[in-house]
Length: 330
Image (cartoon, rainbow, N blue to C red):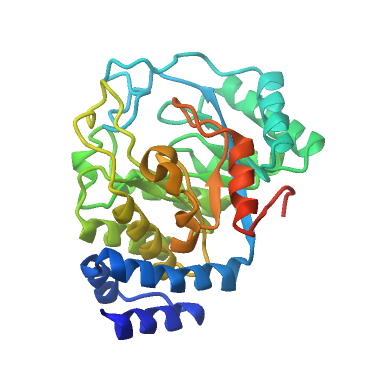
């Protein structure tokens, strides 16, 4: 067993130090037995910097389908024929009602998600701005938006309205990006993140794992996110959807998914790590293991185009581990 190697990584992480690229790559060699040993340490790292709190984020798919981008994993792309719902932007009352429902079952953060390259239609943007203002006034939720390749100017408007955070995934490593998306570039994704940072927003940046990338490319993405200096990271695992460009791929193996979480915790020991898309499919009845691997948050409720786990079941799972669901804005 590579006990000395793993102990060194955990000791460094407990001091807030990030794993090196070489050490991150070596994590690929760990057996299931060695990973189980590593998870004892990553659980300690999570507890050191995050304590017993498990953050729960919720989203509303406020505008769905008919996106002109060709992201191979996405059921909302107009390039694919799927059963994904298609509808125009919800009205303000619907968005606010969804936020209040999320708060009622325990979320501390609520994200408004829209399909499309960017939310740049003036009337639609004004509707989002009004929704953010009302959510801030009528709930204790932190507010987040995920609306594509947003301009600096529009993000500044949202910040002024009370938006706390912007979510924007890099999707995958730069070296794998062209295999997943061709209608925009990896540099476009990074620019959107930099715009959100310049607007004064906290930024949530992650990706989707299990899209045919190598383990080395997972390390590449983790280190790129570290370099951006953002605040939280949503970890998504591919759920292959019929009709999309990646429908032929399988669901990631449980231990490989746990290895991804542990990698991210060791690269980013102090960052909030949320396990989001694919959680039920990958972890099934083993979801409690994602916290030992290093996660300190989950996406609760439904996802963009697929159903999530019953929120009460999430709360029971978290409390059953002796952890504490975070109910209030921080």
